[in-house]
Length: 401
Ligand SMILES: [Zn+2]
Ligand SMILES: [Zn+2]
Image (cartoon, rainbow, N blue to C red; front, side, top):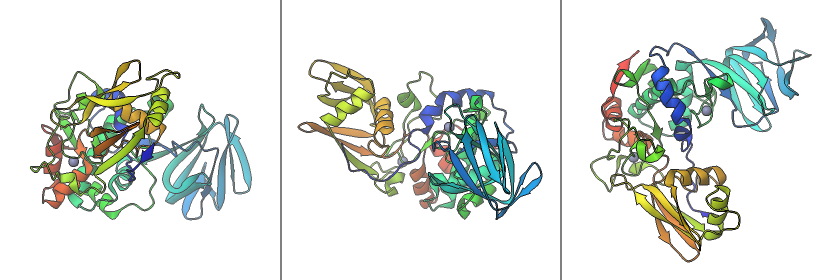
C-alpha cells in the first residue's frame, strides 16, 4: 500500500468511538458542570510500565510531606512502586499533589508533560500504569485547544473551538466512568497533553468564552467536530448509521463557493492513496470482510451522499462474490490497521487501475459538525465565533453557564 497523503489528522476517529456514550451523556449530564473537576487519564495510549517525575519546579507533596528531586512510579504486579526522597513505597494506588508550577512526568517511551493538581498512580487490568490527573474543566480546555487547533491563527476560530470543546467535554464526561475516570487524553475523547506550552490564543479564547456552551432544546449539543470537510459537512446519520438524526448535525455547505470552501486553506485538503489489491486483501482479511482464503479483486463506491458527495457504502469484491461495507467501517478499519493518514476521510472517489485502485479524496475526519479549518476560513472572512457556530450547528443556541 503506497500512501501519498502525509499530513497527520489527530481527530479522525474520536467521535464515532465515543458516540453512544456521548448521546447518553447528553441526556444525563446536568448543565452546570463547568466549575467541576475532571478526572483525565494521562498517557492513555502509551502502555507505560514506568514513569519518572521531576519535582524541582513545583511544590509536590505526598500525604502532606514535601517531595524534592527525581521520583519514579513503576508497575510491580498489581501494585505501584514509587521512589522519592530516598524511600520506596509499594501500594495498589498512590496519590501525590502537584502544586505550584506542577510536576513534569517523562519516560523513555513517552513525551515529557506537565501536570498540576492531584495525580493518582495505579495499575490497569492490562498491567500498565494508570495515571489519573484531576483538573478543572477551564484549566483543561486551553490544553485541548492547543492540541486540537494550535496550528490555526484566528481568535474567533479559537473561541468557536473553546465552546465546542467545552460542550463536547460535557457530552463525553461518562465516557470512561466504568474505568474510574471521565476522559482519556487521546483523540478517542479529546487530546490533553498537559499544561506545558499552552498557546496564549487558546488560553485567551477559553477565558473570553468562560462557561459558554452550545445547546439544543435546552440541553448541551453533541458538538462533534473534525479537521476539514472539503466542501460539505456530513449528516451524522450517514456516518454513524443511526436512524434518529440530530437536527443540528446535518450536512451544510462550507461557504458559497463550492470550488473554494472555507476550509480550502487547509494544507493538503486534497489527498490520494494508492491501494494495491494485495494490500486490500490484507486489510479485508484483517477486518473480517473476507476469509483468509479469499483475495480482494477490487472495490468501488456503491452509494454516496447526495449533498456531501461522501462515500456511504462501498462494494468489495473477490473473484467469487461481492459484499457491501460501510465507508465509515472501511475508513476506521484502514486507519486502525495501517495509518490514519491512508484514508483521511470518506470524502473520496475511487479511480480503478490494473491491480490497484486510487482513492482520490478531500478533507480530513468524519465530516460531522464543525469543520476546524472552515472555522479558521470563516474567521478570515470576518465572521465571529457565534456566526461560525450557528453555521456548523444550525438551530443551536449559545448559553452562558
Ligand atoms: Zn477516551
Ligand atoms: Zn470545511
